[in-house]
Length: 167
Image 1: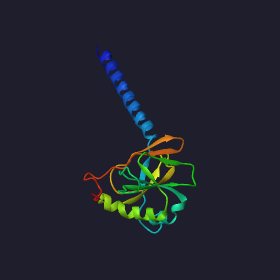
Image 2: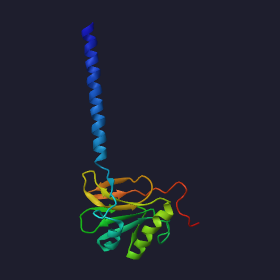
Image 3: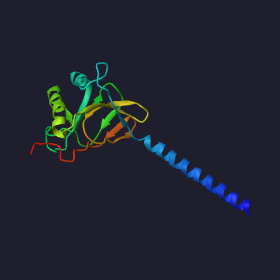
């Protein structure tokens, strides 16, 4: 009778190990489809938002703005997609920024809109490939790889109080 009980225990342990292995491998493959942000530290040896503004013509630049109309009323963040690489950043509620003056004004407005100080981040794929940069100040950002070297940036989160004081 003890031998039968041991076989049942071994079978249960084997099934448990198999189940855990399947869960872990599922989580790992799920993560392959998502990007991540890496905060760029402040300092002279690091890239800054001013460097990006000064070299604005080397990037496709987009602003996340919950305002659906024309113009940039309430910027929540700014995305910089380098022109000299083969990656692409895309999203639904991102408006193209076409000049340096608008870019400069928007970088100053983010903290006014969100009431939080913005920081600069690298946008990286699961494999560590650099897709671009994101300058924003509030909330969780979801980044999903949607094609060959193409990353979808979901809409940025608005602060709970609605963000803008433009009423």
